[in-house]
Image 1 (cartoon, helix red, strand yellow):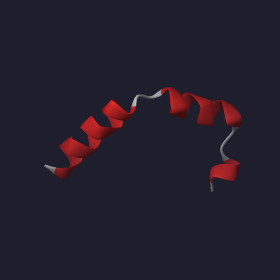
Image 2 (image 1 turned 90 degrees about the vertical axis):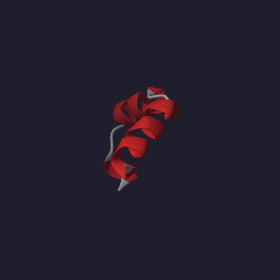
Image 3 (image 1 turned 180 degrees about the vertical axis):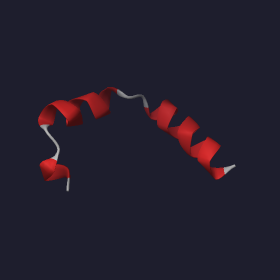
Image 4 (image 1 turned 60 degrees about the vertical axis):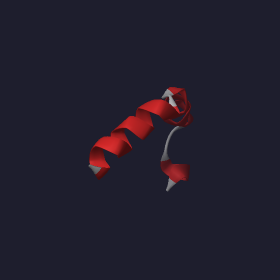
Length: 30
């Protein structure tokens, strides 16, 4: 659950650009 994740971790996750996530998904879907 997201409630179990510390706020610091949630903030760090927000910093990750969506483009990086898109690239990871693209690699995973190939």
